[in-house]
Image 1 (cartoon, rainbow, N blue to C red):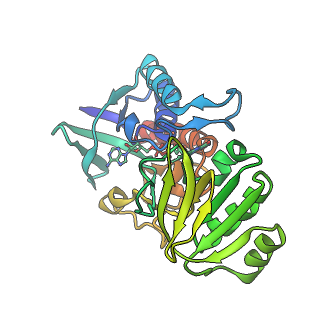
Image 2 (cartoon, protein in one colour):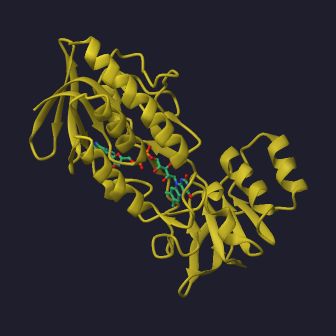
Length: 295
Ligand SMILES: Cc1cc2nc3c(=O)[nH]c(=O)nc-3n(C[C@H](O)[C@H](O)[C@H](O)COP(=O)(O)OP(=O)(O)OC[C@H]3O[C@@H](n4cnc5c(N)ncnc54)[C@H](O)[C@@H]3O)c2cc1C
C-alpha cells in the first residue's frame, strides 16, 4: 500500500499522530498493537479533562475508533523492517504486508527495566508500579519501597515522602549525585543499601524481601530502574539513537533524517500520556505537511 504517512506504534503518541495526519487529509496508516502500549491496562488519574482513575485501555480503544473515523487505517501488527531508499520509506509488517510512505512517525515507546524477582509480575498493578509520578496518589498514608540507585529513584523517593506515611529508598548502591541523596534524606526517606530478592503479598503487596533476609512491611514498591526505548527501528531508518537510547527531535517532532518524525516515550522523559499525545499531535501534523511537499 502507498501512504503519505506511516505511523509506527499504536499507543497514545502514535494514535494521536495518526489522528492529526489523517485530519490533514494525508493518506495515513498506523501500524502497532494497542495491547503493546504502556497505557494498556493502566489506570490514569492525571490526564487533562478525564476524571480518574480512567482506564488506559478504554482511551486506546477510543483512540483507534477516532483515528479510523478520520480515514486513518489502523493495522494490528508489529513492524519487522523499515528502510529509507530513494526518498521513500519502505515498511514491512509482520503479516508480510508492505507499505511505502513519504513520511514516517516513530512512536514505539519504551520498555521499563524489570527487577526480575518473584512477585513482580504477580503483583503488577496490585502494589508493584514502575512510575511514582503516575501512581503516587494511590499510596496516600501508606508504606512504600522505592527501588533503584539512580536519579529517577532519588526523585521518586522524595516525591513519595509527600504522599506515603513511610518511604524506604532501597538500592544496592546509591550512584546518584549527593545533593539528590541529601534531598531524599531531608524528606525523611529511609535509605537501605540492599538488593530486593522478592515481593510478597496475598491479594496485594504486603512486604518486600531484602537479600539479607529482612522483610520490609510495605503496601507497594516502585521499581525505578529506568527504561529502554524501543529505538531499534530508528537505526534501520538511518537515525542513531542518543546514548540513553532515546531519539532526539526538534519542536516540530522532526529527527535529523528528512521525513522521519518521532513522538512519545521514545523521545525521553517524562513518560506520560500528556506528553505523548502532545508530541503525537505535533509530529502527525508535521509529517502530513512534509508528505504534501514531497509529492
Ligand atoms: C504501570 C504504568 C502506569 C502508568 N501510569 C501513567 C499515568 O498514570 N499517567 C500518565 O500520564 N502516564 C502513565 N504511564 C505512562 C504512559 O502509559 C506512557 O507515557 C504512554 O503510554 C506513552 O505513549 P507512547 O505512545 O509513547 O508509547 P506506548 O504507549 O508504549 O506505545 C508504544 C506503541 O508502539 C508499539 N510498538 C513497539 N515496537 C513496535 C514495532 N516494532 N512495530 C510496531 N509497533 C511497535 C507498541 O506495541 C505500542 O503500540 C504509565 C505507564 C506504566 C507502565
